[in-house]
Length: 212
Image (tube, rainbow, N blue to C red; front, side, top):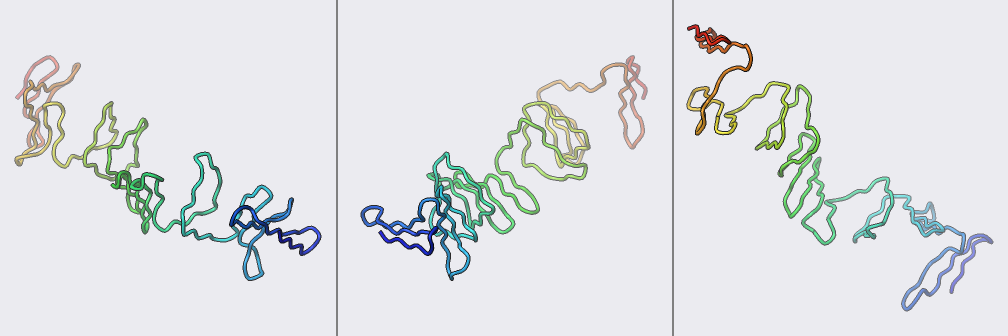
């Protein structure tokens, strides 16, 4: 063993820790600090063997821990991505103003400073909401429950409900059904009106009277 004692309460020990192994230790009760240029330290190891980095750290190899490891970081700088161990095509990848969530080698979610792109169905047990000025688009929207729309809904083409299609095609606004009877009317004591050119043409009163 080599013991270095700069003063009475600071002792550095260099010793053999096994075959072809050499260890550097602070004496019992002392903190080991490592630095360069004979100025401030870069790494401090306390009496519980916990290491603290005083400056940015660069690692050219993997950093690993057990499934129960805990710790905290002020900031981690990553050049490219965080990869799931043993499943390398599943990772979080970073680009310029962009974060990609990838599974199975394909992007599932891409977050940019201008938008968020989702490439898989969105499953939620809660509400999806936006402001009165929100805009967006969907390739397809599937709802297994009751969907409530409190504002105006604009359809670029058609809306299909069962066998009934509502929308604009063949140069006309249409309501057509294929395979079912089509019922149009009101519940309760209300009037049904058919209009053209912004004027009433056929009025069906609640009692069944028809005015043309």
